[in-house]
Amino acid sequence: MGFFKHDRALVHPNAKIGDDTRIWANTNIQEGAVIGKGCNICDGTFVEKGAVIGNNVTVKHYVSVFDGVTIEDDVFIGSNIAFINDRYPRSNRKGRWVLEKTKVCKGATIGTNSVILCGITIGEYAFVGAGSVVTKTVPPFTIVVGNPAKAAGFACKCGRKLQAELKCACGLKYKTSTTGLKAVNE
Image (cartoon, rainbow, N blue to C red; front, side):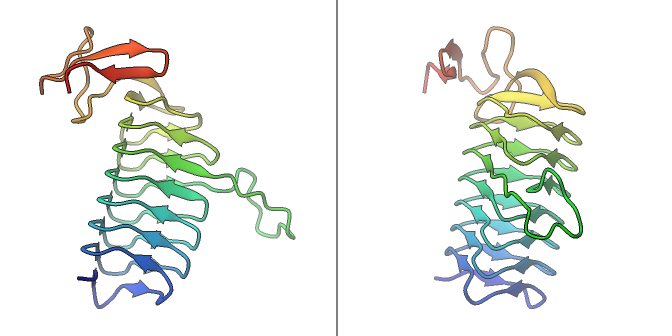
């Protein structure tokens, strides 16, 4: 089996890459990075040591996935996303850096040119609109947009916005529960 690596991609031999993953040109995967199976890692992506990417994830062009970022299965990451792992960056920090972990849960979508602050979680099937600046945790199935990102409705597992009665054009229906939304007809 194995994975595909473009001739112009840099993949450290001690990075862990799953079967059927494709790594495209000008991508740099560091030692200690973990990428699951069936992923598509597009041109110019940087995956730092300590970053974890699950299975069947799409990472579009020019995304930096830094140490402390975990991306679960079936996530879509648009182009030019900035994941932040240092809330107080300085060029000369002399060992005073505190890594704040970020988690992107199963099935979430992050739109192009978004910025994701460290120390937060983007919930299952949440949807971050293009160009958003996410500074707080996003609950599951929630759509957020803007700078700073604010809730703008709910998303279906298929990615479409739910109607007011929590129905989707794809046929799924949801109800609210103590833990957020729950599909009622799967």
